[in-house]
Image (cartoon, rainbow, N blue to C red; front, side, top):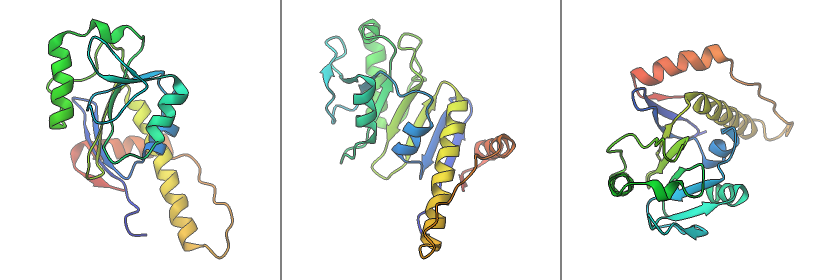
Length: 192
C-alpha cells in the first residue's frame, strides 16, 4: 500500500528520534503510562489550564492528556510532560526561552530533558508529518516502534485480504530485531 511505511532517524547523542509513519495513537499505545501533565510550548493549541509563571498552556489529568494527544488538529503538537504541578514554576527565564526557541525553530538549543520537570518526552510534530521526539528512556521508543510496526502489518494485510476479512494477529517484534534496527537507525536514514 502506498504510504504505508515508517521512516526513522535516531540521533544517539540526544536520544532524539525523527520519524514519519508513527502515529500519535502508536505513541500513546506504546508509552508505558500516559503523562498526568503536559505543557504546550507552541502557543497555537489550547490546554485546560495556563501556568502563571511560564504563561504556557497546560493539559492536566491523564484522561485529558490522552484525549489531547489523540485529537486531530490543524496545528502540529509541541509539548513536554512534567511531573508535579509546580515544576513549571521552577523554570528559569533562559529555560523558558529555550522552549520558545525549540517551538519556533523545531530543534533544541539545549537538550529538552529537564531534571526540574522530570520529563520523559519532548514532542515536536511538523506540518509535513514528521515527528521529533526526545526520549529519556530509549526503551520506550522500542515499544512504540513495535506497536507501529504491528499496526502497519495489520493494515497491509487487511488491504490485501479484504475478501477473507479474518482477524490478523501479529506477534511482538523480537528484541534481537529491534536491537539490529537500532544500530541501522543511527547509521543512516531508514524506511521500514
